[in-house]
Image (cartoon, rainbow, N blue to C red; front, side):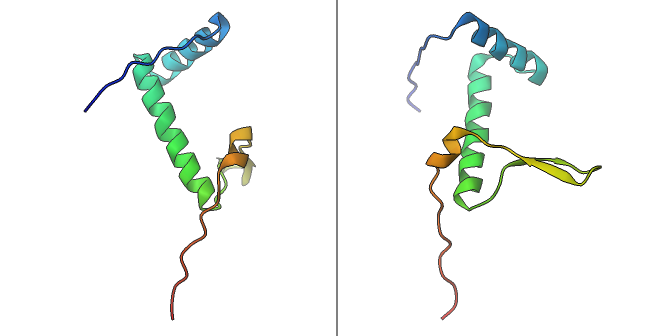
Length: 85
């Protein structure tokens, strides 16, 4: 597999937020953080493209809160293939 290095600038306060997230999740490297974030984003895009909602569920209160992010408006819905004759 070919590997390419990427590099970008992040404000110090944002870097501290990333490092705090890494500690909370037990993530050791920024590479691992990025891989996990990409996996989650791939799943979200797949679910949204099927017309599904992404939500946090409070099972004890029987309530949910849908996640809203600007990126969701860019995801195109894939219509299911017709079935039957």
